[in-house]
Length: 189
Image (cartoon, rainbow, N blue to C red; front, side, top):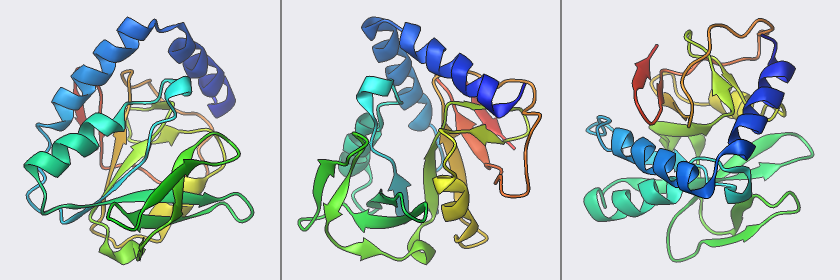
């Protein structure tokens, strides 16, 4: 399938989830995440969920990290819709988060963290294939951001659904993930 077909299909799949189904999938995804090896991670880039779009509830991950891995710095993305870039801001006492004009929760002020300090990026997506490529909302924010990272930065997707066969219309800007966590499985690529 092509990206646009995949987007439509998986937006529809998310929209059809009941609140109970969504909650169960998020809890199972969180349980899978807790099994992920964080021994080399000192800084993790964590997207904040757009709950009305039924994105994976990363607040569960954030809260667990703060209690169980206080040594790991958590940073959040701030998007720039003019040039489709992102910056990262630390989860500290200076952080202020508000919903932007697209209803995305993100920092409006705080301490910016350079991309070269990030060890692991948790990546939002609508769907992903068995080769580690993802389909997002189509603006390319994460592909551009990932291209700026250190070569050893881990790219890990979070998906409420399992992998699809293959994305047919990949281009040279699509960045593969190293892994993807789903409610039932950890895919490694």
